[in-house]
Image (cartoon, rainbow, N blue to C red; front, side, top):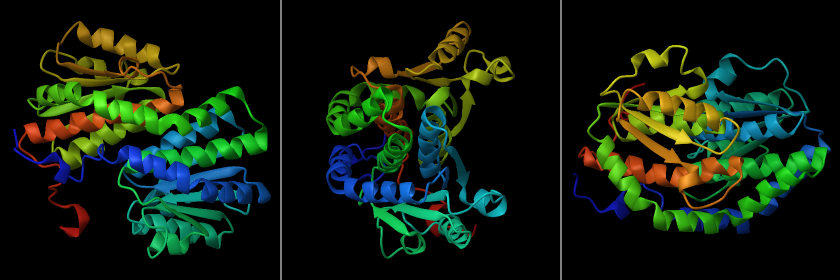
Length: 342
C-alpha cells in the first residue's frame, strides 16, 4: 500500500466536507432565494442542466426532484450534447443551469451563451462565481468556494429545485422534509465522516485485488453509481469499471456472473431497492466477490432523496483506499487537465 499523508491528497475531501456544506447553508441561501424568485417572475416551466463528469451526475440526480414532485420539465445534458443536439424549445420560460467546478469547461459556458441568445434564464455554478468564463456568461452565478463538489453541486441544485417547486406548486410534506434534512445535513455528514472510514478502508483494500469492478444500483443512485463506478474508477483509481442498472440486469449482464467477477452494490431506500436486492441475491448464488454499500447500514435515517448525499461519504473513503492499496495516488493523472492534446 502506498505510504502517503492523506491530508495532502486533494481527491479525499472528507476532511473539509462538513465545513463547506455549512458554508453553503449560511452564506449562499440568499443567492438561491434570489434565483428562485426570478424563476417565478419568468414563470419557468422547463429546466435544462448542462455539465460534464461528476457535475453532470449531480445534475441528473437533482433532475429527479422535478420529475418526481412537479409538472416542470427537466433534462440533463453533457455540454457537447447540448451544443450539438440543442433542445428545440428554449425560450423565456426556460432555465439553463450550467455547472463546472473550475468555471472554465468550454462546452458548459458555451451552452450558457447559446441559451442566453435564445432568451433563456441562465445560472452558473462554479467554485468561483466571478472571474471565470461560466460566471461571466451566466446571468446569475454562485461561487460555492468549496472542494467537495458532489456535495456542492447536488446541494445547490436541490435547494433551487425544492424551493421553486414549493413556490410554484405548493408546499408538500415530502418536499418540506427534504428541505429540513438539507438543513440538518452538516450534522449527519459529521457523524458519517467520523464513523465510516475504517470499514470503507477494509473494503477498499479488498477491492484493490480486482482489475475491474461492476457497480450495480437503481433509482436515484444511478447517477452516483456512474460517478463512482466509471468516473472515479477510471480517472482516479486507474481501475477498469462499469456501471449497471439493476432494473436491466437480467437483460444481458446476468450472463457474465461467475466466480472471480467482482461487483459493488449500492443499496438505497427508495422504491427501487427491491430490484437491487433481487439482483444482489442472484449474484450471491454464483460468487463471493461482492462489496455492498447500504444506506441502511450507516446508522442514520434519511429521506431517499438525501441518500446520494450521505452514501457518498463511505464511497469517498472506499475509492481513496482502493487507489492507494494499488500503490496509486488518486491525484496522479496522465492526461487530465491539458496534459495531453485532446
